[in-house]
Image (cartoon, rainbow, N blue to C red; front, side, top):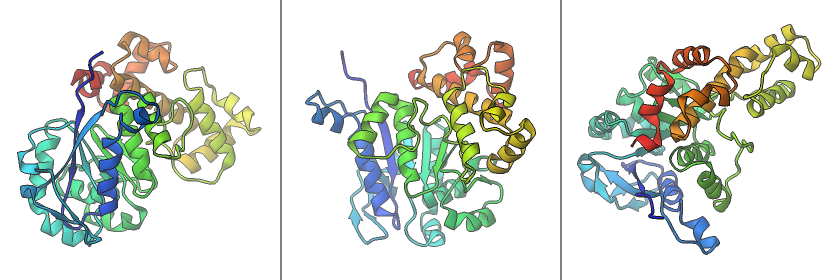
Amino acid sequence: MPQAKPYEVIILGFDGVLGSVLSGALDLFSFTGVSWQRFLDLEVQPRFRVQIASLGGVDIRASNRLIIQAHCDISKVASCDLLLIPTIGDSIDKVLRQNAPLLPHLQRLAATQADIASNCSGAFLLAAAGLLDGKIATTHWGYADKFKADYPQVNLQENQFVTQSGNIFCAAGGSAFYDLALLLIERYCGREVSTQVAKTQIIDSKRGSQNSYINVTLHKPHSDTLIKQVQEFIENNFEQPLQVSELAAMINVTPRTLNRRFQACVAMRPIEYIQAVRIEQAKRLLESGEVTIKSLAYQVGYSDISSFTRLFKRATELTPKEYRDKFSRLAI
C-alpha cells in the first residue's frame, strides 16, 4: 500500500521564542510514524514534514540564547496543513513589537484554512494578528490578566487546557502542549497513531478512554469528586440514553442538587454538558471523514436526526455536512 503524503507542518520561529517548545514540537511531529515503527521493526512512514520558518529564513535566537537555524522563509510559505506558534520566552511586548512583520503572514495562512495552533504565550501573536477576535482561546494562567487587558475582544478561558474555535487551537502551556499535540496528531492521523506517539514519547494521557480528547474543550479544574464522577460517566456513555435523574441517583443526590453543583463546577447544567460532549464527539467523527451524516446522530446518542442537526448548528454555526466539508482530513 503506498504511503500517504506527509502533512505539511510549519513551526513559526522568531527571536525570543522558548527554544524547548520549538524543538519539542519539531521532534514530536517529525517522529510521528517513525519512533513506533523503529521500536517494532516496521517500515518507517513519517506522517508529517516539519519545517521551521522565520521571516527571511534567518537564524532564530531563542530566549535561552540558543541559535536555531530556520529551514525556510515564512513569506515563501504559500500553504501548509498546520501552523504552530510556540511559546514566547522573552518579554511579550518586546517580542510582539519586534515581530510585527510576521502578523500579515499569520493572517495570510489563516485565510488558506490551515489549522493554526499556539502554545502558552504564543496566543498573544494570534491575538495581535486579529485571529482570535470573538473566539474562545486560552493561555498560561500567569498571563491571563495581561491578555484580557490587551485583547478584551477575545473570549479567554484561562482555566481550559486546550481550546478550539474552528481551525484555531490554543494550549495553556506546560504539559498542555502535549495534550494539544496529541489532539492534532489524532486529528490528522487517527487515534491509533496518536496513541503510538503517546506511548513512544512516554506522554501521560490524562484521558484514557477511547474518547480521550472528547472533553478537551470542556474540562474545567474543580475539586468536587462526585461531579468528576458524573462527568466521566457522561464522557464514557454519551451514546446511551442519559437522564439527569439517573445521574443524580448514581451519586445519591437530588436532580436539583446535581444541577446546582454541576453548574458551580463546570459552568453548565448536566443536560448541557451531555449535549456538549456529544457535539464534540460528532466533530471528531466528521473530521475523520469516516462517518455518514445519516449515521452520525445515532453514533453520538440521538435518535432524532433533525433535532441533532439543529443542536449541532447552534453549537458550531455549521450543519454537520458543512462542518465535514470544511474540516474533514479526507477533504484536503
